[in-house]
Length: 137
View 1 (cartoon, one colour):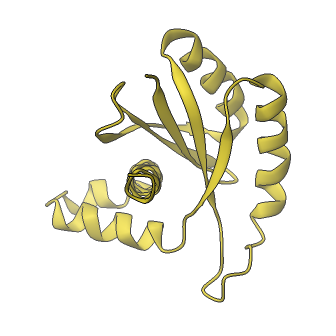
View 2 (tube, helix red, strand yellow):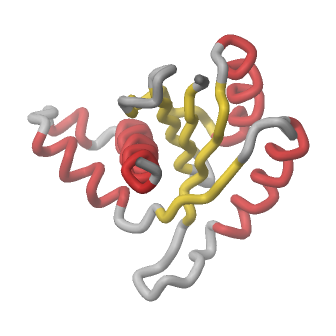
View 3 (spheres, one colour):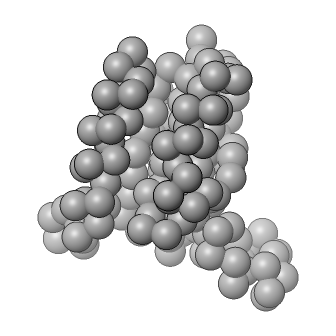
């Protein structure tokens, strides 16, 4: 069994999370500059078996796709072309940034660290992955 990799795609930074090989636990992996995202993913997949990629689907509160979708679709198309044997699917990411900020606050993270947007992106990716795992039990 391989890992599931989750992506919280952003214009500048992208948060990544991954499951353990048995797909029991979701963990934050890192945050990378979006310009280096494809290289990072290809390198990671050479080191670790990944059987699926889950990309956060940005929606508004009314359920419509947000404007960031225009950036995500071309990236996902490139990803599918580069990795044709790994399924890529979307998972609703509504409110993950708010939930991530609340989780960071509840975790007792110091104020200066809470202002680290990269941490919020990584935690958001973890929340996306956890939601996907719960939906697929």
